[in-house]
View 1: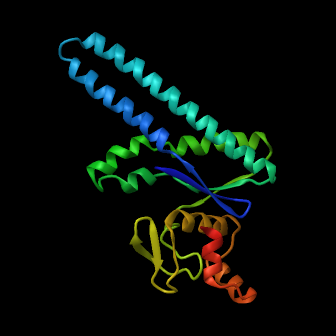
View 2: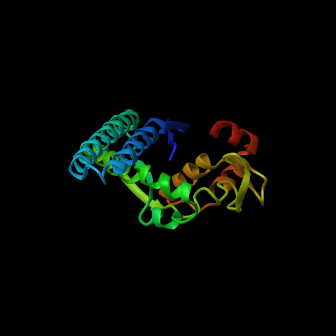
Length: 205
């Protein structure tokens, strides 16, 4: 909800979504003030709600349009498509965890982002593939072990002790799933090429 993390040309790229979140938060506060007015001026309240809802939608759409255009342009440079998480039902899976979390969910434009990016990539003749999102940030991309919270956004593997940002873990797993590779593929590469886990961690971060 605060960033989009991508693996582009073997480099981790992060796109900040804080501006988008603040757009939604700004208009949420406006709606709360307008709703307090509804008891005394219902017609005025409805008119203002429509007005600011349209503004919010247009500003969010403009932000997403610029972001997806930038990412599509980066992918076009290397003639690359995109592998994205299949998000159907994902909001339902995280509902009711906390009131604060539930308030954030409506500000999450992930499906809009995906549909806009997919349209632009297909228009450019680039492929788009969706893969299962389950446990992408909880499965070690090196040994397939289970990751546990280590502090902040870091995750630690209980099996091989790898420590990595959860978003980077997710994109590495998405890359393997998109390529149809088994989870053990990266571990086999490390053993075959004699690469240390420290080098992998350095390159990824």
